[in-house]
Length: 493
Image (cartoon, one colour):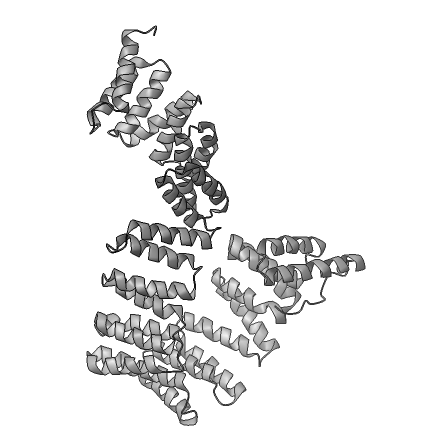
């Protein structure tokens, strides 16, 4: 972030300037520490003091781009540019171009080129836009200007020119650019890798698998390439070279030797083992990763999924893993939910309530919050603490308004807990509209009708519930049928 320019409005007082300096510094500090809500609030306060300050407008524009979109932020970015063109031209040009105003973006670029003809950033942004528009010859002309200003072409310039020729379909020209640079810099591994990639694509195009494997192996061994690039190459050429699972595994094991502490390699190996159905092997790799990063919740989730499908893993081992995860990640609502499921299976309902009452406060993902609310309400119903369940049902319905299980359970809780029967009837009716043959939903609806004295209609629905019930022995539905039938025969009872 550039230093704040002293370009405030002349109308601002010395006292206001002091306040502006203080709050702008606080906003910058909050932003650096990723306290974005606090930073945004402080910037709005700064804007109220001086709406012409370029730094304030630029930062507010960046936040509004994230919150409301580029078009909403554009006026602020324009004001920042007009207040201090040299500092804030870049984001204004990008946003103007991306909102469809190419002419406006190019006008600013040309203005900047006249004002600062040797500004490399201006030239390279112009080149980037031309590349986006597939105006490759013009982009190369801009690249010539950059090289003329910098003298001997830099590595960045060589890569840019090489990519332009590739986009034009001129692989031979791209290769010449790389070879010329390597004559002066023979040890530049990244350029050698680009050269190898050209030959690798040619080998794939000709169907020369043996040569392609050799060249891909060279890329994997290249010490100057990033790991992410090597993994990307393996993925990219898996289909083109028809790599077998064993060949991919050998390449990944090679990478693991090169990068023994990089989780991305282990992740790729674990994914490969999972693809091949080797759950045990995938779990072994996952456990190694977990020893390196024990608080990785997503990794634990993946291991949990593998454990549930591995026939060699016992339920007790799964429960211990859940307990360990819960203990390490107390503020992770998902693991709190899993732990509560285990405790519910042990009928330790008080512990379940304690865990879930905390978890629902930390839950961020809607699905997790719904799962917590459903389990929590079920346990509260089991404990006959029905009134406590009502707010949780409301919370769950806000996130999943058409969930028939929630609607049915809420309707039932209202019915047996002395709640609003009309509300219960409407919710229960929605469940049988969605699942007309569900005996549980039909039973709930019939019982709510009975509680309202509508026994004739209740008898119709309880008979349907019996009809669709698999178990027609002495169960809840049968008991309800007998009570409703007896009520019709003796209406005063």
